[in-house]
Amino acid sequence: MHRLADISVIFLLLDVSAAFRDIFSYTLNNKEYVETVEQPWFRVHHYRHTKIPAEQKDQSPFGKHHPVPDRPQEEKPFWTELEKRTFHCTTRACVCEFFGGSNSSLALDQPPSKNTCRMRDGHLLKPAIRKEIRMMTDEERMSVEKALNEMKRDGTYNRLSRIHKYHGVHFGPAFTIWHREFLKRFELTVRKYLPYPHTLGIPYWDTSLDSYMPEPKDSIMFTSTFLGTTNEKGHVIAGPYANWTTMEGLPYITRKLGNDPEGEFLTPARIDWTIAQDDVNKVLAATLPLSTCESHSMDDRHLEYSHDYVHFFISGDMGASWSSSNDVIFIYHHSMVDHIFELWRQRAQNRTARERQYTESDERCFPAWHNGDSFMPFMAPLRNIDGLSNAYTDNMYEFEPRPTCDITKQDCGSKYLHCDVAHNIEPTCMSKIRLGGNCTGFEGSRVCYEAECVQGKCQQIAAPLPDIPKMDEKKQEMRKIKISPFTFSPKLTKDILNM
Ligand SMILES: [Cu+2]
Image (cartoon, rainbow, N blue to C red; front, side, top):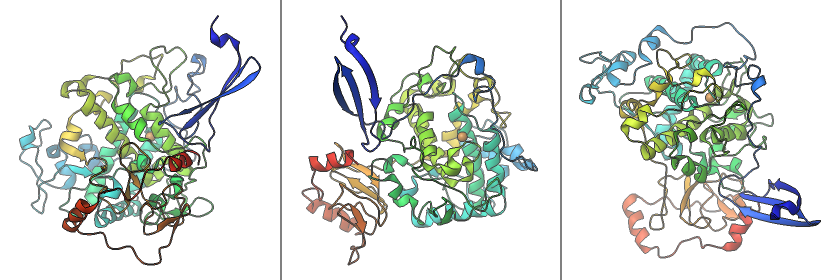
């Protein structure tokens, strides 16, 4: 007889306070058994994703393309005439008119050597560089913040955000590429507001750097230096995006960090899982299939689900697709999603496959607007399949690598990041923790930003920390370091798992 036949009850418990640990409880022969499994994927429990009953097709998000506007308002045109002429472009020569530059020919299919656009000041338009937000210099980050604020003030930010509000594509294979194209357009706009010459693109926020600190909401990201702070109602009232108006006419954006029990950041394990996939359907996945769909798995680690969990963690405006683009986090987060998508493309596909491989149309699995040959909602004349073009990252933008560190170079290249050598097999970059934040398990390390980790809390330091040595001095010092400043302790590892 099969062993499981004796089991009267099986249930899965995930103790929310025990991150990265699943607890399975079994009743066998009237006795209780508990199995604890440590896993790298999730730190909170997620309800299983389920298929939509086929008969509910038209009432469900499967069959409804547009999220219901919460407050229909007077509609201004979404795109300007200039944007309509240039925003489909995926070469710099083609998009040149948007920047008021000039080139020898405006033909769409320029070879790379002719993919030029000379700006009025004589500089050539270069591809935008997308950097992890903590890897930018303060000056670079502040210039992007300034550009975004100008866009917010003159209404451009909210005008573009409305395109996502009403036309954003989710729950299926076109999710990644629709957002890729939307971000490309948003980035072109940001670049116009940035002073020339520059190559800055929209930053990406790699939330896996914040994923395994004791309290992710204590990250340096949630201070006025980066994303800003909120009041007790969740309104963003300090930092670069304080008192931003919303598309719905509110005078502030809202975040409720950690309120949604399903919310969590990306984890390195789930990012690597996506990059390791060889089946296109595991990345361009049918994430909300009908019950009649048999060919698609609904693995909780799918990129779109992982992306959802970040929205849920921030909550407030970010918690719903009709309001998420109110918050600048939407842009930074989707830039990271696009980065993961590109890392997968580069690893799993050659140039030809990148432009051709797309999930096969199947109306039992996803609606027609996800099909490869369908127009991208609100971004015609582009079709979904055009979103797979190599031209995006050949011509328009590129990503700087995610921060890393190793045992010989325990430095992630940013004063806002910490190289953790104690809690992982490999040294890993993580975000620094803000003053007053929970740093349990990191005592003795430099995980606190301009503070010291004492008894599990980032506390004000009596004397300022010495200045970060300049590069040459730093290299010399590295040679002197023989042992890690933070010794591995199994007990500390256990503590952090228990938080
Ligand atoms: Cu979206």
